Length: 324
Image (cartoon, rainbow, N blue to C red; front, side):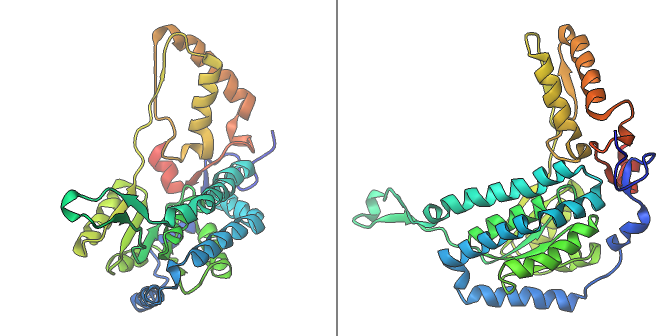
């Protein structure tokens, strides 16, 4: 097998502590962040984001960005995560384009008023549901799928007619920089703003009043987000992962089960919220499952996965120390 392209084979992580300095270093001032927020508020008040034409234009811009810059996206993810190129393309380009296509296909029908029954006491009136944009949305994205989980929130926010501020993860600096460079070229720069930086920037953002906050990550940060949102009664969407057991019973197709469990566990080196955490295996299936898995691992990654260009890396030394 070929040697991984981004790091020495003896390391199990993609980057060292030294390259994670942005987690603490201040990049932008509170004043700059407040001005960006005010700009989004002013843009939303113009009403232009509510039209179907504007929403469609933004989604098509995001799609062009992914397609025209797919190689740059993959290179940034390889630098940040040491992920195999095909995994980078599937996880952070193809998945996003597919989501945009689905949204564009249904956007017009989603925007139409939905007729609903009218209570007797309110007749002869008529009732319908009209879906209105909330306003200005904050998206705080994680590092494990740094393009996918940044743009998925933007797709939803823009399709709903909102202005959006994206805070990519500073733990994936190459991707963070790329998103800040590309997004203003493809979407309305007065309605979508990228704020880079670390913990101080995130704290400054959370002091402001948002109409909705999207956060993907861990429970510790999620509690901080929820406390900050509570100050303004801001609704939040939290995607925090969880436990994902797999169950193998007698009569299961063991080769298929083994392949699916390992594919889910090793994609992105297991850095995905739906990766199998453990397997509950009936004793009658255990020996065959273990044997099948051992053969698959060798066929996929060779005798030593650290020398394989098909196996990803833990994103940095700190997270390597945390999980090993």
